[in-house]
Image 1: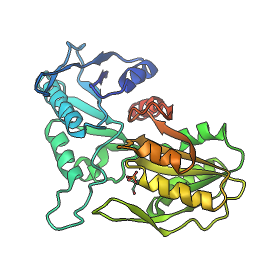
Image 2: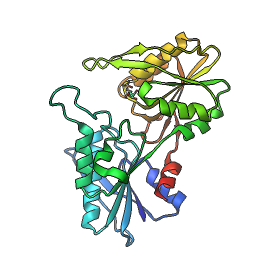
Image 3: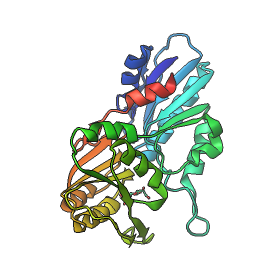
Image 4: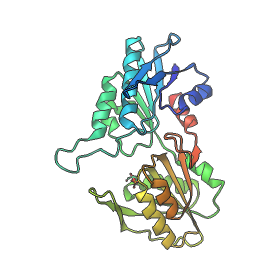
Length: 290
Ligand code: R5P
């Protein structure tokens, strides 16, 4: 097995290859003057199976298409088994039509990846699991509760976990179990025209003297965390910490979150975001590839 970092591998491929002691290469890559991507795969040691690491943070379409170029080229080179490690899988929040004739982005992305010759996928906490409708059992989904619990246990003494979604309670439960503390949730509703979020069900628990850990899979505009942080603060939380696998942080998300009283932001290197405490996900991915 050879590990290959794509242009948006964020160095994770290199880390995995060191952990697994496997041959490593990175894709030759440049941008043409008109903005198109150039991809070339270096000559690889003879092997039937290649693992490509390519995250699909912004610009999402570019990174998805580069992954397609890589897979296509590997097939042309005679590689039989392609595993795509996609630490952050874009479009998983476009998983249904909210209005008539809306595109369902993740379905199109999944088919595109399959058609390019990718056999299996390893990804981290996708917002939804539609990728499985195309790749079936050949998708491995990795969680982040253990990683965050390990890091957070060192900095909290009286934690309390808050989920930003009732439907996502299992993740919060697992983090709370590892941190040996209680958990609660908020229920929000989003105005699909303005993208603003409002509380449908606020936090019921008393957070006096507690470190509130708001746990989410992804932070995009920061609206959800802003809301959750203000609610936690109104319930008396002494410190507000955020942990989210994917720090997409669109626009002024960081400022919104900090202004809402969040003191620390924890994320992973599925998406590059230098202003947070970043936990390396490579070890978990390496374990999944073994
Ligand atoms: C949605 O339910 C997700 O779990 C996140 O809470 C959401 O996508 C975050 O988006 P934003 O940062 O724009 O509120």
